[in-house]
Length: 240
Ligand code: PGA
Image (cartoon, rainbow, N blue to C red; front, top):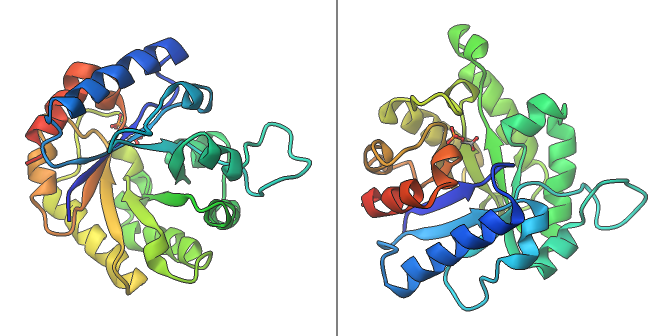
């Protein structure tokens, strides 16, 4: 299967900047410079309408979604509307949502169900903090997050997992590829079905090849380095 790159633009880009960067990526695709990579772009909600992926192989993800399709939930965005705006995927349970908005495994499970009801594929982020890692609790923490996500679907392969150790996000240093790969293998064992697991946390043009060389690392989720054309294009180029 092709390696995939998920570009998580977080709150880095304005609508105008998102449109410009997307146009540059469309040109890369037209020039056949995607290097055999499946690219999924996750812009902010409000930039979704200006990114037209209809005629390309590039896919679109939302960065979050509401836990229901419709209802009295001020500020929530329905996965149905995300689908209409072109999102085939949605990132759920990102550590920034868990930390800054206190999202729990139970809420994330409801969001997974809503996304699936709208035929949107959840990319479920899991990962331990530095303290949990130091206390050798990585598998306990990640295991609980993965099990909660699995409880929301009938078939585990409806999900994509992203292993994102919190202490590696935005730090400039990724986890050693072989260490990440062990957790990926653990997640796949828990799913007990063919699920794809990508790695996220300080992925860069310099380390992407070594990460993707690991058998159990099926793709990467890139934050900072995905929000500029030069570094995202370099990640795509170095992916294989
Ligand atoms: P980073 O972010 O690549 O900037 O570390 C990854 C993420 O948070 O998804």
